Image: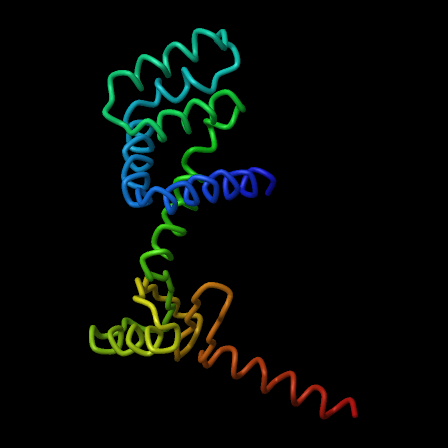
Length: 183
């Protein structure tokens, strides 16, 4: 849990810089590119995070890669800071938090909907429109299926959960009946 808090803090610091200089979207793209480099070149990430290697040698590897890229000066400084503070291994989480914050700056919010059955494109659009009206922001909706819901949908947007599932309604009814018996 501590790692997530640390990652969120670094992402927030970078997004504040991005807001100030108007480069928030560019920094997002650059973070995505570096994470993609980590994903495709596992040895590169290991060379940076493995404490069995000399720290100065690891720093030289990072510097050589940064010199070969066209990343912005801010991003290069940010990556050097992460390395110096021993946080370069958190880059994936930092990039994820940063993307969420950058989306929020653009007025885009992530939401998820879980339904008992497959939803039609029309139903998905209606859910998106309703959430968009409720929040005043553009919605990116992730749709999943869970037959255990029996019927209805559960929608999550941020901390807000809109539960219209039959399963929850039955559980609530059961609790109400239990309370009625014990009174």
